[in-house]
Length: 150
Image 1 (tube, rainbow, N blue to C red):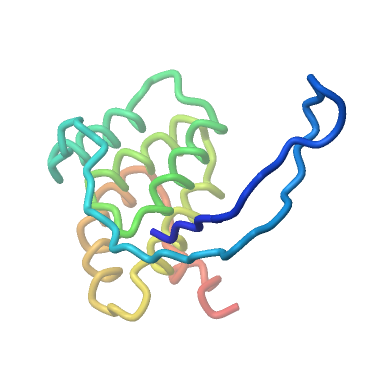
Image 2: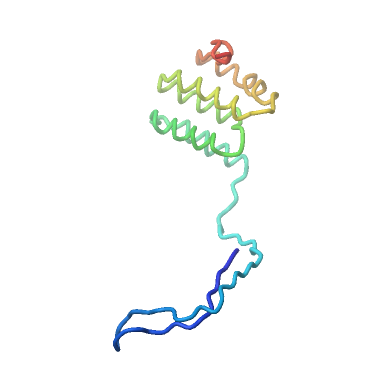
C-alpha cells in the first residue's frame, strides 16, 4: 500500500467563525511505502470443485430458465479462469434444448473451444464426453457444421 502524508501548518483565514482554511506552508510531502499485509476479509466457506459444479448444474437445470438467464449464466461461467466440466456443459446444452435455442448451444461449444486455448486436448475430450448428449439432443458441433473454418 502506498500512503501519502503531508506535513505542514494550516491556519484559518478570514473573520472569526469563518470556515475558510488556507495552507500557509507545506514543509514536505512524504511518500511512505509499506508492505501489504495479507488479509482475508471473506469469512465465508471456500467452495469446493464439486460444490461449484453442482451449483452450475442446478442453475442450468432450472425448468423455468429463460434465454436471458442462460446467456447470463454462460457469460459468468466463461468469465471464470477455468474450462467448465462436461456435466455443467451437459446441463447448459439441455437448457438450450428446452428453450429451442440451437444458436446458443453452438455458441457454448465455440466458447468452450476458445476457452481451452492452447491446450488442444481439452476440447476433444469434452466433445467425447458430450457426444451422447449432443446426439440425444440433435446438436451438431461447430466442426460438423463447418463453421470452425470460417
